[in-house]
Length: 178
Ligand code: PRP
Image (cartoon, rainbow, N blue to C red; front, side, top):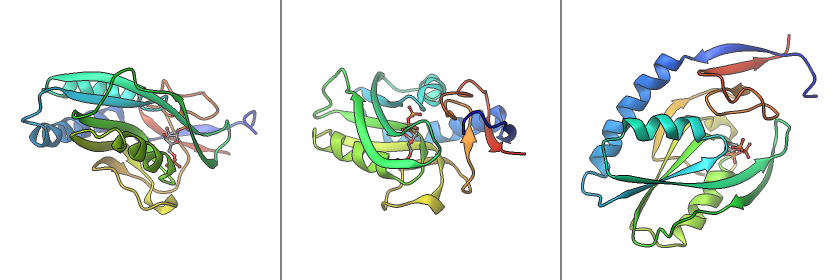
């Protein structure tokens, strides 16, 4: 299937993403204005581009940590199983935490990972997702901040892959099979 030819149409430009991140960071700064040191947790691999841009726009004392979870194989459908492949390096008990996701689709990943982080008793846990596909939801989850709500299209770029490709596109594109 992944050998099938496809084209990518731009859906959200790099400029639009940058403007949205700026606005989101103002809101995050208000929420965490009294924080000692915010732990910004990137959910690998999809969030690596988003978190890089996000933390450079955030005017707060922060630490960065990563967690790797996987719910998909190399196909386009969620297996609904969330596996933790790499855990955080640091403890988050009593800390303020911002979990950074690239996309919320069925919601299983966000549900599983927020439960896991919550069980470690952070002072405050908030979540941000660049993209949200509400029409695909299977568990009732929503990030505290969302960059863009999108329809049920297969998207790539800005960290998001199709069979591990296209993560390096600077914009969000829509995959189309001509
Ligand atoms: C993708 C994406 C989200 C998750 C969303 O990750 O990055 O983390 O799926 O899907 P859900 O809401 O249906 O759970 P994936 O497992 O493909 O790993 P990756 O980030 O390494 O690409």
